Amino acid sequence: MLTRTSTRSARNILAHRCNFVPPTLPLSPPPLQAARSLIGQLRFQQLSTAAAPRRLGRSRQASPSHRKAAPFQTSPRRLFSATPTATMAQDYETVLKGKYPAKEHALRVADYVKSKVPNASGVLYVEGRMTKMLEDNDEPEPFRQRRYFYYLTGCPLADCHYVFDLATNKSTLFIPPIDPDSVIWSGLPVSAAEAKELYDIDDVKYTTDVNAELARLGKGSKKTVFAIQDQVLDNITFLEFDDKNFSVLKDAIERCRVVKDDYEVALTRKANHVSTIGHHAVVKAVKKAKNERELEALFLQHSMQLETTAALKEGVVWDDIHLLAHKIAIDGLHAIGILKGDKDEILKSRTSVAFFPHGLGHYLGMDTHDVGGNPNYADTDPMFRYLRVRGQIPAGSIVTVEPGIYFCSFIIEPYLKDPVHSKFIDQAVLDKYWDVGGVRIEDNILITKDGSENLTPTIKDPDELEKIIQAS
Image 1 (cartoon, rainbow, N blue to C red):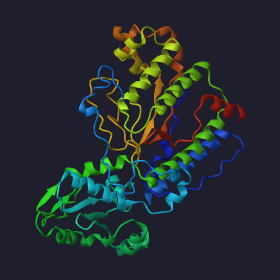
Image 2 (cartoon, rainbow, N blue to C red):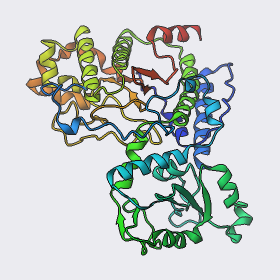
Image 3 (cartoon, helix red, strand yellow):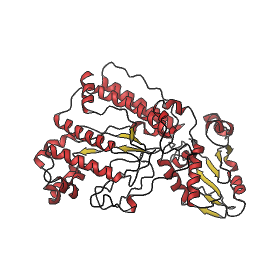
């Protein structure tokens, strides 16, 4: 059975500075155990690091909800050029020697807030994730920093707060003070001076000072505190502020996160490099060649991937690219005899959804399914219901391209019972493919002004994969 290959095993490296040295893969048999060992080491490294568009009938006249404006673009003075620099492709390690660009992220978010709230005055306030203890235990739950907080600070520490002064553009990080009782068990924590050196922040204070600082910044007329709904502790007070806005900041961060800067793209390159080591090791461990039907499915999926990727560039509508993938899937399934009849009618009936039921891909960033895609899960059209990105995609964004072909009886059998679809499916041919299961190979694509760049160096071409298998 062909299974999905992706860079997901190394994905969360994007959210953290990673100093990874690829482990040495033993070449002696048994190779499968060696490959599994390598992937295990990759996953351990990931976890330890984390701890410190055209639519039928409305293709060119999509409703406004399907053509949402591109994420907010800042002025040229920002590091966030919509088209990442060419130097990133040369050496991601050079880029990663610098600090995570939290201050530039904050400036970009502040610009967006001011564009939505004219004459905005006051502060942006964000909390990191707080320590939470395991139930009936004296140990904390596994920690994962809030992505909204990390985007503005680059700080992976628990129990922190962040304030950005819109008047002065000064950023302040508040970290927990030293707890003498815990030093004997956990050692000395990061000090304020050390945190200022580690993170791209103007000032660092302790959390004991956060309410006093908010009170100071809230004095004066027409001051607003911009925060995220349900992410403010009960003991935090905004009493000095004339207004509290819980609607703009979250949207501002999400829109800004769609377009990546050089540092974020470099992190993605590194994550893909790490994952490629593991995937190639697995391919080398495969000793049994695929049967003809599995190879047919792989070739079909590969064709979908190549053609959809070739169509990508700044401003294309993701709905159109998703529709293109379905057209290619219909062509391929028709060629091997599973689908029959008029291809346009097959597309109109949405019968291809039986074999390609999910969306083509999603934004990629600090989260696997990153923010800013404006999905519409209430869409009555099954072809677009699970599409995680709707509308135009901007330069500087990273999207996954992961079309898939599946032979899943649970999903397909209702189509076989429905005459609207069954007339297009040759069940006798389909019966030969149940054992294939499915194939979905993911590429991570950086969108540029005139095209795109594939950040995933893993070998996916069926002919090249066969060569590696035969040579192993």
